[in-house]
Length: 400
Image 1 (cartoon, rainbow, N blue to C red):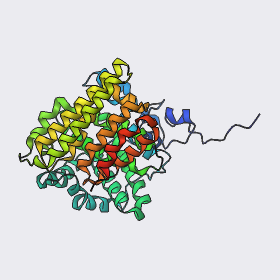
Image 2 (cartoon, one colour):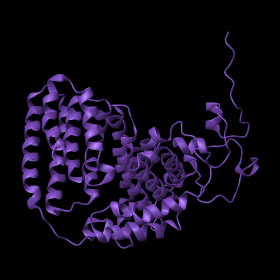
Image 3 (cartoon, helix red, strand yellow):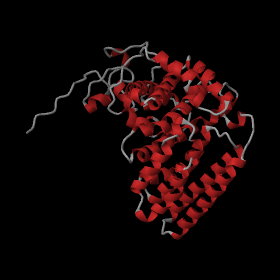
Image 4 (cartoon, rainbow, N blue to C red):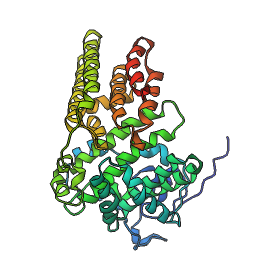
């Protein structure tokens, strides 16, 4: 009989680390659980654990059973799942040796965010000012938001300067893990007082998630990660009952109805007409294919939502705000996510059309590479008889 594999015992560590037989740092939550987005539970009371500290900032109590939910369990489960939000970042946080403290690099990250990153998150100066001034000011009172913007800043540096990529990705993952562990708990019970920082952090994480798939080398990685990114977009719906507080607060310009209206829709007219033509072609193709009626209904709904989001973009005119790139994943049915996850060919065709829509946002660094990488992932798993449907998306994405 082969000898048992040695492991580091943790007699007073959390339940999850004991089950996985790894060393626990015994913080609340521990770094292993924070890194993986898992609920961190201890078998003995917090005050009786050696090394437990009562003065850690932004301490998140992750036991699901002890949360006081202000939204229904069903909604929380549907939107957040058993591993809410953070599953979109598992590919970044897995097997990363994270530091355990703030570092001298963090002031550099804040400087980079305020001077550079914040100005890349919108095409409108008034919205850039919100990212540059209002969001950091809110983060002074909400440390998890501070971690969020530092994580985004580090990711921005990593992707824009490849020679510095490794160290900044590690720093980004550190701040991401610390920000998520508090955010996950607070998102279960939003209030008028915390809805603005929660909304800001949600926006930061959606941007982060759209940028992060480009870090993988696996050809299928973007396709496998995008569903979790879409679920992250849906998670923001938890805050919908509190949106009137956001509209009245310092983040009001993040809402489209808070922006001054001006439109240059003429430059979108040709793109809009061609896109509608391609949607009609695909809808007709679905009718003549032998597709299950339930699935076909989901696909047709996805096409209708593509039309709807395109119409809103055309109505808004240029310059488009990046938030409009997330309209489609917020609007489609949950079943479509499942079909994409299963790599169903027809669902992948819908996703390829969404990649065309994302081309309108190619000036944003966090949306620049994702459409092409998604399209390549789709081409790998698409049957040869359907490959012709990728000709139009490829032509659009390759155009100047």
